[in-house]
Image: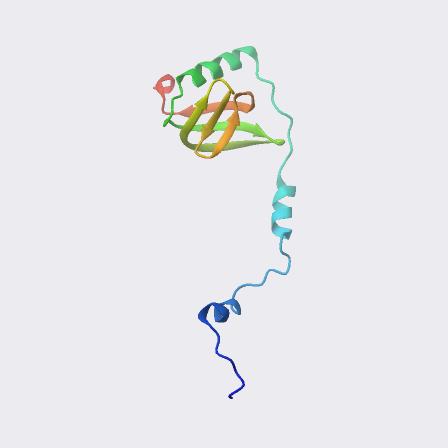
Length: 113
């Protein structure tokens, strides 16, 4: 019994960790599940409504933005950390979104009350 070396708790824990023989396979399946869609072209009326909403948004507002990115529509909810009218971008926490990719904005700001 003198040949067995002493394992640290971290080394010992490794032998009980789950083994993923198909590493990356589950992520690849999730990517396949995405349905790629074309970007919706907003009507002039929808653009004017969206523009009004954007003019009401202020830093630290809690909002939800639905936006188009790489063939899918995504939804992010959080505090507005930056609103840059020069570069036409809005940042929700760490997600930077171009005004041109926004489909809708929802939240508790003046135009909804």
